[in-house]
Image 1 (tube, helix red, strand yellow):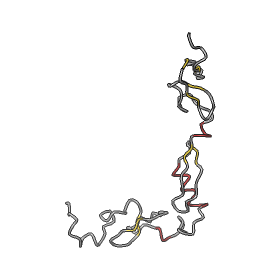
Image 2 (spheres, helix red, strand yellow; image 1 turned 90 degrees about the vertical axis):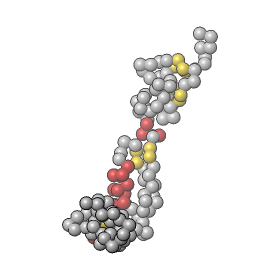
Image 3 (cartoon, one colour; image 1 turned 45 degrees about the vertical axis):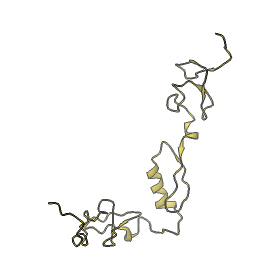
Length: 147
């Protein structure tokens, strides 16, 4: 070897390849080759310190810390239902005003869909006009009746 002081050996246990442009992991501070530089490729034990998602509550704009291994939507929903401190949108899941207006659906939504034609509140399943048989749908001529 002409330049033994240049580069680093990959610290992944089964690799140990000499790499002249090694990657230093920002979580575990070790050097890796091109094949093992990603967290998942070298099974980094400190990945939880660096690889995080930071969602923001859509109601109170509070930053919610969620590690990557946890489902983001579940943590944000839990925040909204319990610790959300917003005065802008005080309705919670227990509020009967958020119940779907379609038949016997009675599904509760945190943020209900309001039909722009009939102005009633609906769940995700019934939010479109043809899903909840909107009475104004029949009077409009721009809709096509498919049978």
